[in-house]
Length: 201
Image (cartoon, rainbow, N blue to C red):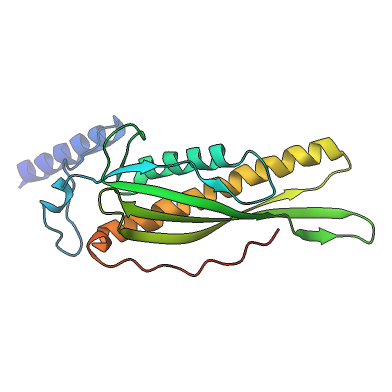
């Protein structure tokens, strides 16, 4: 009986030493999947996607290249596709437009604007490269707030930064939505075209 107590005490001390020395026990592999997803589902090759430069239909100049780069970054990070250069063969092609950029006032006094917001509207569509069949279309909105100061030049810098953030948010939203579309088998279903809002400047 005394030996059993001693063995238990030694085991407890060893466990305490392992924990205090920073040892961690981890399970290798993907682990269990909720919903019973087939093991082979993740082995399917990702469709190759070309992202063309957006058309800028807003009054803000020089946004098309930056917003296109945001889309390429976000779709490369997580959209269920492999983004490739325009010069390479691709299964899908993304085109779109920057529909509008507006800067509404959020708070103000009788004489001064205190806080504003930049709102951008982006419409994209993805087609099959070979057949030109529309497989997905989505309207996305991005917004970012900024405080207004008495320095006009600094305010413009803050507004430009807010426009960049709004474009990044819209790109991330589009990539996330397309990933859901791909994972739900949407590439094998007829595309639903959203109604495009009239651009407001």
